[in-house]
Image 1: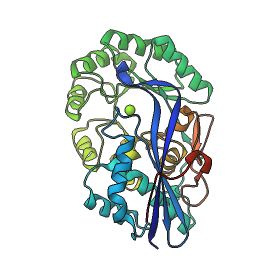
Image 2 (image 1 turned 90 degrees about the vertical axis):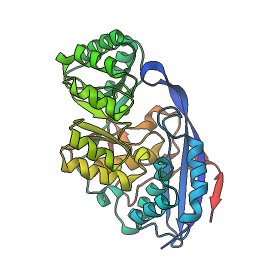
Image 3 (image 1 turned 180 degrees about the horizontal axis):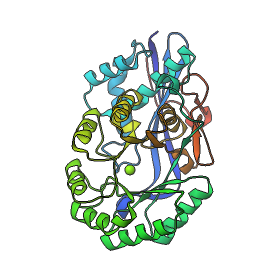
Length: 366
Ligand code: MG
């Protein structure tokens, strides 16, 4: 089998309400998503999606994906999509780095591999553990009352895990964290995600100021070194997210004992092939994981749901349903229901793009 044609679609995905990332630094109300269709000489079509969480969250942006695919597409024509590891090797040789550009292509290859083998992607990635995967909410930063209302709204939809964005001045963060923790049932879990907003001194002050709560904190500071410095002067559990970009970052994390938890985002690390390697490393060393994409509609969510569902419950914490925050869906796929999501049972990713939503391709390579 070989790849004969690659079609690129661009989709503007409006958020139901504007999003304020930690510290109020980053406000946006729309995502720029790229959907990729890979066709083969045997008539199978695989689908993938790449979508940064706005342009200010990570080193990546929507138009960057499409520019990168223009560069890479000639290398892909003729490759066998049934061997995603080899496709990744070719892509990394043609264009080192830029993993977020390559994720959609990798997802489409896994989709084809699953369709061809008659197996859902989760089973190719390790199995199907549990009936469903819990979803974590994403709670935009705001006043303590606004944030609590958002948490309660998600809880009424069945969510029991919440990623709450903090990262302002020390006093306000301590106030918010105490208020939210004291007004949230013990059956629910709150992760306080600073998204790199704190200086080490601020992170240490906040985390030690609420040390009695033993709350979990995600990505307190900009760099790995800063987070490690904070780690050594605090006692709360830590999750690392943005600084975990590739396999070697996990090796360093494990050697340093830098975190109990990591957030593996398949778009950030370059797709399911690389995310699976990182998942396996975490399992080997007892590191628990959030597994999700950086953003996007149903195709991205479904791909993440497959890897999360393929990960034993002991190691996986949750995944994320970004599509629930959008005004429209560009495909059908994994079904989210009452705070959980299930990887589809169909072969491949089990996604079906909605032609009217995708529109015409903006580029075709063949
Ligand atoms: Mg995070």
